[in-house]
Length: 202
Image (tube, rainbow, N blue to C red):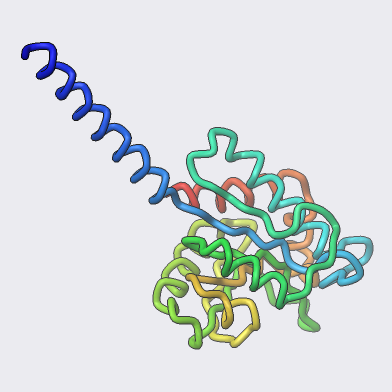
């Protein structure tokens, strides 16, 4: 009888452990990072600097920081490949992440325009969460080298069609000398990647 009681107790503990393990797996946060453009789509350019290469570098640095893998971070583009917007959205919606961050670089005819900005869509079902994440991320990344911008409403295909909180993050202007110097530097890209990763891990 005592052995049976002990056996049942062990089974109970195992059941709790297994239940907790599966619960933890199911609630694991998944973040999708989309490095904008790619392939024949260069994005913004200035001199030899190309948006597609800068954002690819930042995205890969974020993945490298996630060595423990506590949060699942998925890159839509790991190399210099072109992916149609519709294909990106299909991948995002199959993954069903907690958040989509699409990383881009800005450019303007006005060389004085600078800083970090984000775009969200009112047509996204998670609009309020998207706005909050965008505001918090801008606050996190902005510093004395990269001015604090704002969250703007825009019905971009990616943010409108993704079935999750979604934002397009513009980390500086290639057309602005100060921004360009920072976002094209190894140190600047490392700092941006670290800030985004810290935000994801919160």
